[in-house]
Image (cartoon, rainbow, N blue to C red; front, side, top):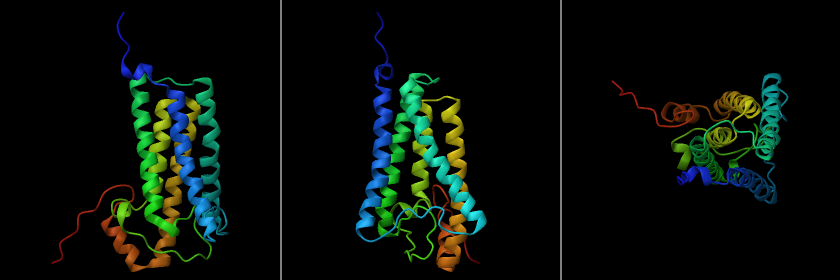
Length: 206
């Protein structure tokens, strides 16, 4: 009898639940810590501007709606990819957890979910934010696609694409807010750091 490959023996249901628990554990732990400091972290949908409000409400629906779909996929074993791809998905999801953890730690008390109405936050450009303007969103994307690889089916595929698109639209709204709030320092930051990953080459001044 040929010995099964390493990936064939992995407990993918438990690995998926672990990466989800870690990710949302980071999210809610950060919220609780900030609450103790008198900070309202969750501010999604509080702004009344129509375009921004619509984007944030849809983003919230996407990010909360994907969770039961992911859990149902695990429960019913809805996966169409080979175990090697599923293992790759586990690594991607784990990487997403790590990126997200680093993002909320570097952001300290300036981290918010949604665009704040009146909170004054600092412009964070160091640590992981020196390599990505949106490492928290990048962490979300890696985690979502990782879970999609582990439990690929039409339902997780739809909600993953929906969530990633809505997160991107939220980023565009936040860029407008950051430009208005911080002006030239933020514009300079945009010129040097990419939206998702990497530093931009600086143009030589003549």
